[in-house]
Length: 120
Image (cartoon, rainbow, N blue to C red):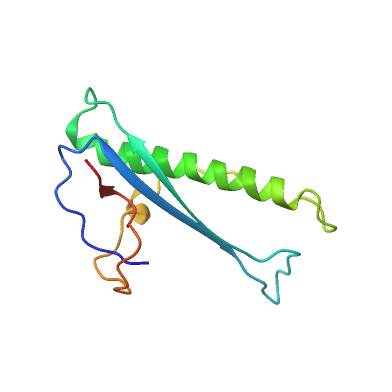
């Protein structure tokens, strides 16, 4: 993923939130499914929200919404498989806003938007 520094977004009302989930086979924790999913969410924050709180609000709530959509899709897609449905655990992103922000360096391929990128 191409990660770039976030410009000043104190005036931003719209944010892109990118979230990825991967489940891989591990010797100590075998699973019937291998997943590698990435999804984007477009989050708009009310102008009534204080400027200093907009980014955190968009990231935490946006990640929660995107994760919920991924969780539902994984359950739906695996429901008819022979191994049965895979239900991802619930997630709480309130205490994890620092890990939702993009790093300042990345792969440099330039075709993906980092979480929290200012749109408008």
